[in-house]
Every structure is written in C-alpha cells, then in structure tokens.
Image (tube, rainbow, N blue to C red; front, side, top):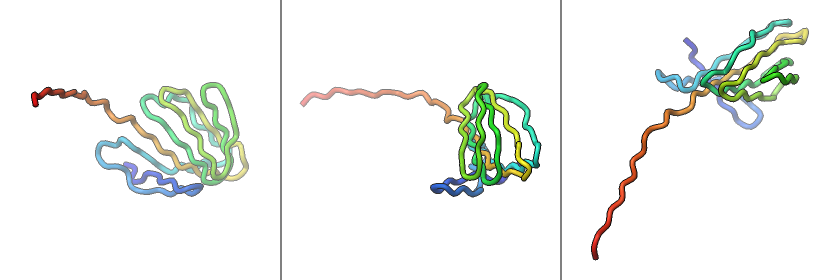
Length: 116
C-alpha cells in the first residue's frame, strides 16, 4: 500500500501522507529507467497529475504527444487515454497524484414562511 501523497508549493513538490482509508487521493513516486515505456491506459474515474521531478518524459494524451522535463506538470483529465515513456539516456523520476472526485450528495432545500 502506498503511504505518500504529493504536496505542491510553487515550483517544488514533495511526497506527504495519503488521505486515509477512503483513498480519494493517491500518490506515489515512479522511477523510470532509460527507455522505460508505460502501457497506454485510461484514467477512468480519476484525474491524474504527473510532476516530473527529474529527467525528460514523453507524454501521449488523447493522441497528442509532448516532451516534459524537470519541474513541469502534466494533467490528465478523467476518462482520458494516456501513455508515457522515458526517451532520455538518464533515469526520470515522476511524482504521480490521482484524485477521485468527491461523491455528489443529495441536497435538500428548506424554505419557510412566517407571519409578522
């Protein structure tokens, strides 16, 4: 089980604790050796943030590709296909944070009238 999440402070990021048993937020650190390729997949019901802490990573999101390097962030919206790889000769380090949206709870409107 992962025991860390990510805290962003300006251009700096660091791992911190997950949010507990409900795992609305989940985070981990991913080390990518040179040539590593992550399989294409969908983000399903979670939004993903990838913070490239070191190295260069090529991201493919919904058919578009771009190179991302140290200190840059990639956001993958829910239900979006994505993949990534390390095309560089040096290892890359990613901080990955996923967030599941809060459940929508039914709301109740209460109105009243009074006589003065």
